[in-house]
Image: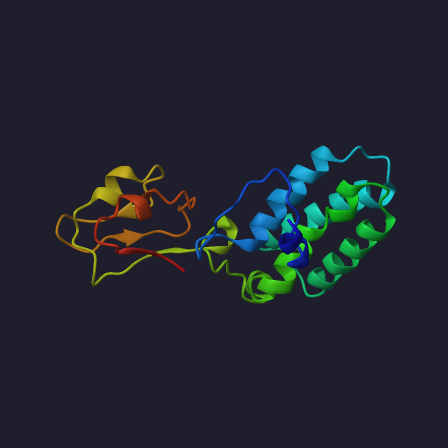
Length: 183
């Protein structure tokens, strides 16, 4: 237990979460803040309002509406929540956000500056494209696309209409040739 504390972690429920390059750390921070909003008793203004503000900013970043300065505001809110809270929950509530900013700041910057989600999780920040060299024209994606945004002829590379695409990911999942790629 002491080693966890030295590493800046807390025991919590004893659970462990394994993440990889397909995990969006901004979305993870948003998930935890959303959970903590529900757990907060609401008595401390800094915790109640701070978590709500954090959630709104993180949601904006994940939806492609992030702006320069959002990361700094999140850091300031995190400090205010920790300093102004009267319980252990509030004292640690900002940890998921502050930790992801500390160790994955580049992901926040990709979302805000480049309007891209490196993990391919945040729908508004991804594009599905067809690699015409890999596409065999099997038409699995055409048959499974719920909006009809993919068209093509058998044994010919398909075409994806980005304006009709709802970014559901079905085409990506069914393509056996890895011809549908996320950008």
